[in-house]
Image 1: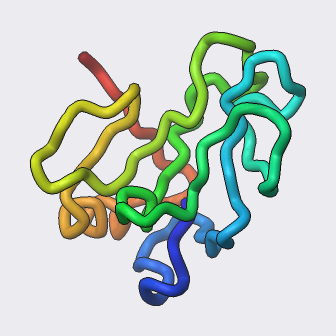
Image 2 (image 1 turned 90 degrees about the vertical axis):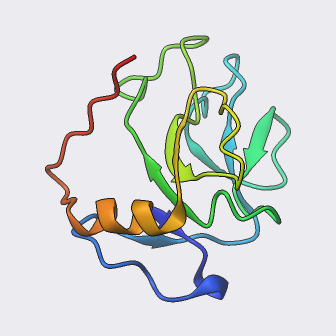
Length: 118
């Protein structure tokens, strides 16, 4: 999981917690070797910036979708993250209120499995 260190300490969780840096991104370009991976910005390929002003990525759990190995075009940057205030749809992620996400994080370990079902 990733967290914004400028917004506070790592959350209580059994998951490995990595501090985000302002130059962290996530490659979403299926033509790139780094597809669906953490990248350092600037990055010539299409990517998402993880250090965002809107706060939705202040806490991120990579859900492990399409990552072992990543298959181009199947999907990337599928995260559990903080929801916007009015809970609009995400582009494939799962979003929770920050307090709820922190409660979930307390219960997770490196062996946890999160199953997302429609």
